[in-house]
Image (cartoon, rainbow, N blue to C red; front, side):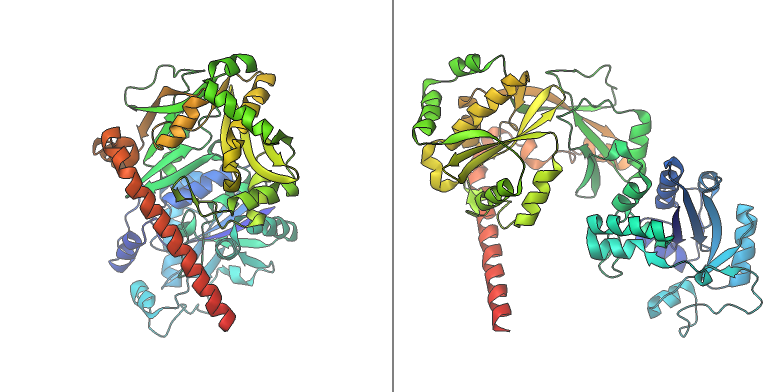
Length: 505
């Protein structure tokens, strides 16, 4: 059984708002944001098919309202007291407000003097003393071992804490967490974010597995990073769940080449986007349609002894990719984001993609370049195409594209995507020379909150590069690239300085 102890210290996700409520003794239940993070955890527990027991410890300022209590009415949950300042008064109030029989208590500890003042304690009391005749059982006295899930998530990361939780469950360990750190981390308290580990442990929210949320100014924009692989038809339940996860806007594309959107809501905001798309009938048709110059580039690679073939995902391939990543910090005039990546990280990212094909271009035993094809629903996507710069004169990338088209034709995949067109003139020309065309698509933005609606009205939902016209954007690219290169060089110089200081010490 999964055992959780949840200390609900503060009523809101916003620390400032919570501190003000505690400082001014405001107890305002019923608002949409009140105990919002706690409700998310309760919903996850209720949706889980696993055996779970959750002990909820509430303070006087986090007394569960009706919506929260409706989620705690199963056998999986038990309401308990998190003592703040007055054990007897808080116990009686919690029982009256929740109509629950309270059995356990814990004590809300505060190490900082300011926090003691905030909660109205004596400055000498990090914890409120419990009277000897207090009738509730101390949860601290339970025989099970207790481990902090949010602290271990902060210190050890997602992958390691998932392994630990599997052992803790087998050993009957009680895992503690605070809703405050469900989605964010605190360097000061060294806690969070626990959502990913909790989701994996409970085996829930599979519909959000590929959804990421990025912050644009103060607006949270959710996006399925597999949106090109699959058709997305957002339901009301899905959008409601995203809203509870803190998203203000959800965006997705219409895959017009395969499955146009059916009856899109008039409330969905449309914007125009594009992808570089190649329709594949067969390899020979592609070969005949590309220009003579491009065909000669492919032939040149063959004459320069470039051997191109499908390669299995192995440590040897990962090492070759790692060498290509770390050959140079600057590519195509701008900083290369994979420069400095470790061999272990390269291997981990390679192995995580199961439904993909790697094509390698070799000169003897050396990996001179590679391409990764991701296979989706009625589309194949070129995720990576990269070659050693020292072999730039051997047309390695042209040979890789030719092989990718051949592989997709053999797999009867009719559509091959290669990013988008419009942000890099030289790369755009390479795509067009290899048969890719600018295919217009519609991107939808769905406001989930009032903040999201306002952000869309103010045009804050799109990235700046997508809002600028080409006449303005293209002249700015050299400056943008220069800034990118300068930041990378400064980063490398700082790393070298730190290494020298370390060697001296």
